[in-house]
Length: 271
Length: 87
Image (cartoon, rainbow over all chains, first blue to last red; front, side, top):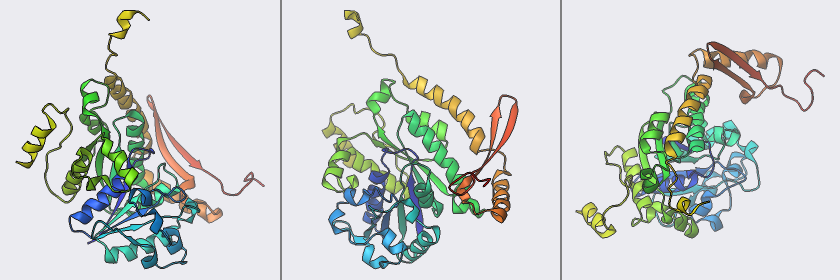
């Protein structure tokens, strides 16, 4: 059974697209045929993070409008098997996202793919609403910072009232919290909200904690999802999160400051 | 600024963040996690409005605001068109 997963947050700049790219790549790496769709019409960036910006010919909006076939717009990732990207338009605006059109594209994708990842734009306007409307599950990307937590709470309210599952009285959208840009050192110094603080306030299950890490910017610089950087803490934390999503039980890593040398930690982990 | 200030650490600010959020959430949740009939009321209102005007689903909002001991039902209907709706 294929699943539609929305990656959303309300607030901008918290790591939705980074998460979409890594999550999609992670699911594909674990053998699931996955497509990731950019819903940020007019401000497309997923293609950049996936490193396929020069291969975009047709896009999501072309398909919705019937100007191109889905097969023509889908871009196959060159590094990861089972992974496809559906970029969006850079010239149109969110009004191009018509509900019946979006539904038709998603229904067609459901026939072919195990997972359909919807990368939501920031805000709670049309683009964000359209990206979450058809979702079966939602990953709420949150930074340990008050405005991000507040906006996440708001988007949880939107999911519970404005998604298709809510409108049609179906089983509610399954929610997962992904805490990103977490800095254990600053948490220890009392400068940052703790995982527990955020969990207590948002009260949804924790999927993972992604530590603040230089590898994330490096990954975007070179256009490769950070999950492919298997040496980095952020990459490993994303991989763990994907495994948890797929049902594994794994302890959360990188939530306390590193005490031992890096070498020791690595030894312990591979042992 | 005295020389001593250079060595003085800022007090932890995370507890303040947590407290502010908790107060804020308690207030704001009263809005969108209101009584169970709200979604149905919202749907019915939309249906009635659509009998008389072309209206987008997102233009009708229904929420319950709690101000102290008083609960207030707030219904917002944004009218379509590019000018005053009473024309």
